[in-house]
Length: 190
Image: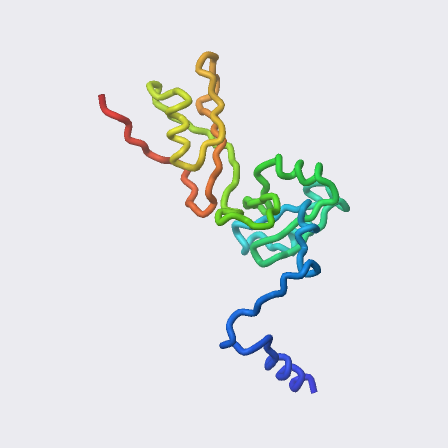
């Protein structure tokens, strides 16, 4: 009996494969935009190590928002968290870099019509080291940073003492590009 039911279910289809795409009616009851206003959409960078089902359970605990947020698995790589209040959502977005199972997550506020680069960037602080003394200024360091991503901020005041052997640079990093630990730069010859 169950094998005949299985065959019948497998034979079911939404329409002929050759009939082309189906057009969904533009009806208000089919739209969930209102429910998504207080939500974050996210993407895992290593689906083999970051199981969405576990992430949905663990992140609210990690954020200490237990009953104030609920998660939805959208695919094996994407997820959504819907918050009860705007302050909780903004607090999570302000933290910038989030990790799960020792891998970075890409999180962005939900938008109804996402741009083509949606869930492609993370804001990250990097340490830039071994900067030549003749190029130890904000414009040169910004140029170096642009080799890695879009520079948002450079923490350097050349009028004050600087004790660290690095300069902190905040980058908008494209996660589709390979991560570089070292980059050799040829300087101008004078």
